[in-house]
Length: 469
Ligand SMILES: C[S@@+](CC[C@H](N)C(=O)[O-])C[C@H]1O[C@@H](n2cnc3c(N)ncnc32)[C@H](O)[C@@H]1O
Ligand code: SF4
Picture 1 (tube, helix red, strand yellow):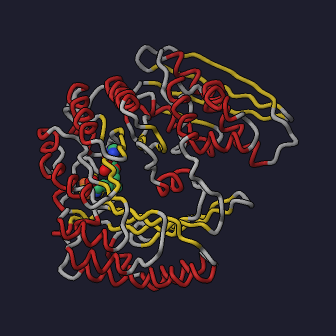
Picture 2: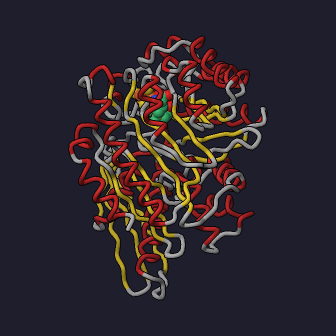
Picture 3: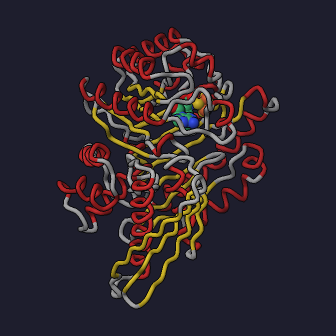
């Protein structure tokens, strides 16, 4: 689809929304006219397959007393809604998330409640009516908000994220920046740990100066558990905070040893992730992830013995998988009964698209897989507690984290809902300062690649000090 608009600030939103409808041979021209208190959106849609041209026009009133920011947000919402109405009518299809293109639908719903635009018990209806969100997804959002009671909006209560962008090998589908360790020069990992130590020393000063209380620590990546025992212990020694929750991503079961679990336990780690992604060995081979189900089960039972809370990640829509295979994976997951299960929808990387085109499922099937997981998990006592969307996910679907009993991961909620400041440390980490009273968020990114991060560490530390002033 080709989209042109006379409002350049809206172009990307319109393109994002149109892309969610898939590939169609349409050319769309949008024109917005604003006269005092009135806005008109006109669209001309040309179908290049049959030459047909159709025109659509919508107008609405805009309250002149609103702030510029509020007006901008209404104008954006309306134009997306209008484009959604046209495309769903012409292509005879609806999207699960309606006209929403953003990453955080639950945050949007919370904002609507906090601004008095929707009552808590009517938030699902507000999403359906205001953004054409499907009934199922709107209910899912409402349900998730109920399960986020651990949120404490307090500018002094912060989370610490440490990024370890290292992996044993690269999985073909992966959309994260991470280095295969065998491709790094010999002392690169120790150099990286030296730099992390420097940055963490600065963080300790910031925490003391600002009287911050660190509520959770999350060491993610990548695969932090790929560090050998000595280096893992060195890393954990740098993180000497008493916290409510301490998570280490150990996604690849083949990196987990009894000794590493011991080291984590003795350093106060409370949660780990062991991620099968799928229990189908043929798929694992196809996606370049040389881990066996036995390795997952063994690592998981050792982790349970040591008393860790365990999360498992899965992906719906992996190339070559049909609903029956996915169902089997979910059944196995439920037999293992981890404390958390996170179900991702495949996000198709650019470049991967061509290679896997033949094997990637129809979007309708992926939607069915995602709802199957939701139903099976609910039947087994799991509840959804956080949700986010990524770019290029099949049919604009989402990732959902589920918990059983009381085992929500506070860090996941805080980072997706943007309710608390996050201090990000390491290559590719982002720091986010949340000002709850002023209702604003400031962000700062560290360099993405290991080399750049290590070379620029002194400047990164200086910038961090200024950012948290
Ligand atoms: C940052 S990754 C780290 C996980 C860990 N290294 C592992 O492989 O188990 C977190 C999760 O994102 C998900 N993920 C990665 N690439 C994805 C993609 N292209 N589409 C959907 N989910 C993806 C996977 O489920 C993965 O476990
Ligand atoms: S091990 Fe995890 S982070 Fe690394 S490439 Fe695979 S999915 Fe991505």
